[in-house]
Length: 418
Image 1 (cartoon, rainbow, N blue to C red):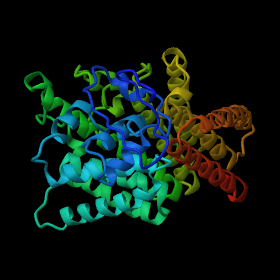
Image 2: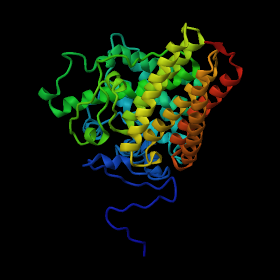
Image 3: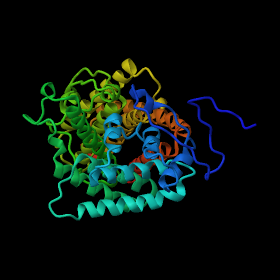
């Protein structure tokens, strides 16, 4: 007699050819997307869906929320599934669906044979959409481009990734997402929940692209395409509030960075704030290398301001970030970025031939802090083995290349005199 399965339970399919039906149920809490999902879970359903063998219409998108959403939190689950079941979807929405399936397939060990065909189909659909005269980008279009950008860096060449990034960032500029909260643009107190949820998706798309822009541009020493010194788009609200439809008004990034006291917000917000601090440390390094300072006081004024931001952020992490950073990819990314900023500032202080011995003590002090930061990064790196293939790949590649670049600059840069 065949073994019976209890209602609501699932069993792993022993073969790729085995079909498994999955019915999506609207989540009541956003914690549903935070479960640790093994890369092989629901692989057969994903493959069946992408090859047309499964009659479930949303299994692949469900796999996306289980695998990708934690580190690319740009979609509202209930809003997405509300239009995903509609027969009258826009071209941009269909492009987003295929981009989500491509992303989900790239994280599935058994769906590798389908990811390239999904990617090719998604790119053809995006090209057809963007070839139309007078087309105006919408949020689903940009969300699809963000997912393709990440896929290109993960699975394709870096050259294709950089081209994809430029395309994505230009669409964001064309849609003017950086003005989402400009004066008179939006008032949540007179809008229905569906309206402010759509606005929040715009914020999240911008800030995800903002973080990607910083780490892509800094690695290649390119100018940024998206800037943080604007007060016309607020930081994203906490994930739980977003998914559960509870509006929370957030600060603007410049206000948060200039504040002397930082509150803990969310892992996504922390990754944004730490990335912005890291970007400012890079600008500080560039000003130093081109000799923009005529005296050491100007150098140390910038340095101390950045150091105060790092200390304040680290203090907020210790006071409010009680859970381990290893439990959340965005939080791990934020912690590692903050420690990389300490290393960057240390290398800047070492690059200058200080004429006054009173500054040498400050350099020695920062060298000790940099050593502690390097040890912390090493410890965090050990946690990458516990993450899924994409999380481990993206984080390890990013920070390994940054460390290598910094070490090369440390040994080859000629000291400047102040």
